[in-house]
Amino acid sequence: MTNDYIYEIHGGRPLQGTIKVSGAKNSAVALIPASVLANSKVTIDGLPDISDVQTLRRLLEEVGIETSFVDGTMEIDPSGIVEMPLPNGDVKKMRASYYMMGAMLGRFGRAVIGLPGGCPLGPRPIDQHIKGFEALGAKVTNEHGAIYLRADELVGAKIYLDVVSVGATINIMLAAVRAKGQTIIENAAKEPEIIDVATLLTNMGAKIKGAGTNVIRIDGVDELHGTRHSIIPDRIEAGTYMIMAAAIGKGVTIDNVIPLHVEALTAKLREAGVVIEEGEEQIFIPERTEPLAPLDVKTLVYPGFPTDLQQPLTVLLTQADGTSVVTDTIYSARFKQVDELRRMGMKGRVEGNAAVITGPVELEGAAVRATDLRAGAALVMAGLLAKGKTHIYDVYHIERGYSDLIEKLNEIGADIRRVPKKEEIVTNE
Ligand code: EPU
Image (cartoon, rainbow, N blue to C red):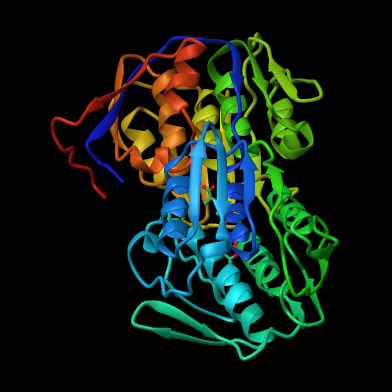
């Protein structure tokens, strides 16, 4: 995680052309730990080139797994895996390292994993993960900032999630594929990334039914084997570019997208007056000719409007003609971008778990700080829209999750440079 660079954006340049979406970050960060469960080589194609993927790769190597990563293809050979505690270091750098809990528990019946870091979006408990592991027979304790999981034997169980959680659903799945007997996860999350992980596990020999619905049934097996898997496209990256295209596009094609996965966004953009043409794996957004209408948006679990797109959307709404309200029901404090955007001229405020934004305004370049991944994407977008020069600090957040962001956007007309940081900015953080 280097913090020596900033992004310099010269705004006001329209986007035009085709932008290709990479493999899904939130699948990648689960698929890589899932491969730990195999007893022979797993190959995953289409992985995004982001720092979260590199961090996970280092974690696998720490436990003796051989890996290679060339052109988005990672080969993972877990046959030499050693049972090792992972209390510190890389494990703390990213929240999704919590998938090593389920994976190591499934593989060894035991695990020690440092409590995860990740984006500061307000409280992000993992009680549902732990409840699931305990139901499968693990004893779970928190000792000095690390979670210790120990099971004599994992036994299938019926688990009702009190909160619909992507992470808990996947983590329980990872452990349950090696448990004795049947596990039923009720009130499971339904995100496409869950189906992707279930597909990998199934191709490794697991027996999983119902992934993508709210009841998942898993029959445990004794052994899982290697396989080859192609990751799904990143619906959040696709959505980010759709929002940018709606704001400042002169005809942008988003390539490698599954339109169904971004349907909630498509519906909201259309409501605002954006024209969207859907192909099989492409979405075309022509130049806007009508003013944007304001929106009332509420984030929900999939297939509702994703919390991860709420932050970029707030930037688009600075261009809408009237007052918009964006409510986040998943992460109530995920509005750190608003303070930064106000430096750029946004007329907006946070009220409880909502941002209230009035437009249209002309944004102006400023020095701003990426406080988390999607806030970072929002600031890049604001920089593209703004008059003059924008400097974005703490871009390592952005590089955790967007593959080749600068190259991709510059290719379609943006002017973004990654330049060495000369001085620290002072913000009211
Ligand atoms: N929750 C609990 N207890 C738990 C787990 C979750 O109360 O044990 C709550 C959370 O606090 C939150 C809600 O349940 O209010 C949903 O959390 P979820 O577990 O679904 O989130 P996650 O698995 O930790 C994933 C994505 C996030 C994305 C959320 C919501 C990954 C690695 N991360 O997080 O992605 O915002 O689902 O869709 O898959 C991002 O990509 O920028 C990002 C933060």
